[in-house]
Picture (cartoon, rainbow, N blue to C red):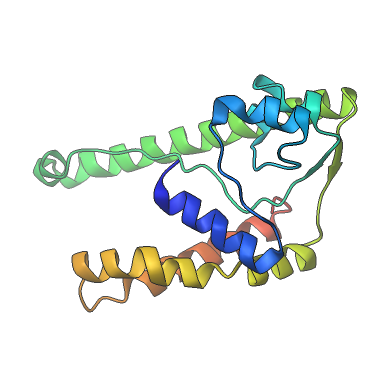
Length: 181
């Protein structure tokens, strides 16, 4: 994990009453089994593929993070393409994004079924509970510490941090309205 991720988790811990202990990922299963740690942050694939469910009784689906699927192209190449090819690439990228999102969704449904069948109790906080979690996690402090300086250096005067935060809020609202968040 990056230092930024560790700082993010530490900040979340301060606001929510958790005490963060960083340990190597390879040691997490044994640490959970022996009670060295009593909880962990993990995504559905890790719960199954790393067998964390074997040593956990409960899991709370906070949905505070997600993976981004990016379609990337070299800027010089992109700029050299005619507009019609750029549009074709944009459409293909959107189709790939939708296909991958659906594949992720299907796999996660299967993981959840497997986990419940194995006896893991999964709790899904209400939108109100997740809003409280976000507030207590105080993510704006992390954005100010880790993101703002870099964004200001690379995008001076553009208030890029606020633009990104606004876009993330828009996406969260869209996902929640669709019943996914």
